[in-house]
Amino acid sequence: AARRELMEEAQIKVSDLKLKGIVTEIKSKEDENYKTNWQIFHFVGHYNEKMNKKIGTTDEGELIWLTLEEIKKENIADSIRAIIDPLLNGSTNLVFAKYTYTKSNKLIKKEIEII
Image 1 (cartoon, rainbow, N blue to C red):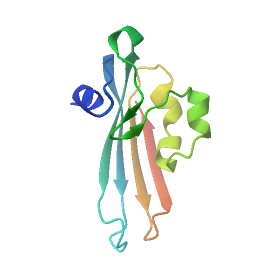
Image 2 (image 1 turned 60 degrees about the vertical axis):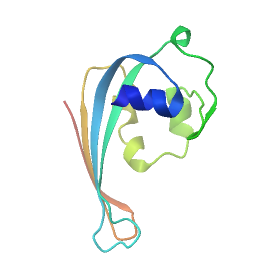
Image 3 (image 1 turned 30 degrees about the vertical axis):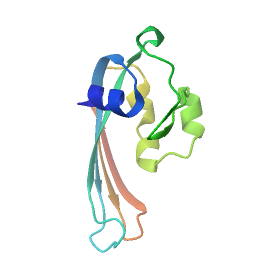
Image 4 (image 1 turned 30 degrees about the horizontal axis):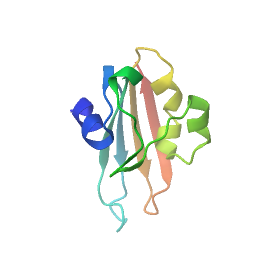
């Protein structure tokens, strides 16, 4: 499914796609704007320019390539920032994370386990 989504949403073909992280986000039941809990699956794979046409703008927005250090400088969610290193460090470890948020959608608890 992840491979298909990459192709459908970004026209990108990858090889060696692997599940690297499972994140559960628990929202406050009192928050009118964020009533839905999320489970997010993070995958990593290898991109080969020979397998892909030129990428650029899609219906999802403009695609850009960033190094790990560039990603860390971006405005990314706290839940991703906390696990970006173990997701992209090249290890075979799997990251499990659970984040709990307040009524105003502020992160109040994070549990991270790397196996």
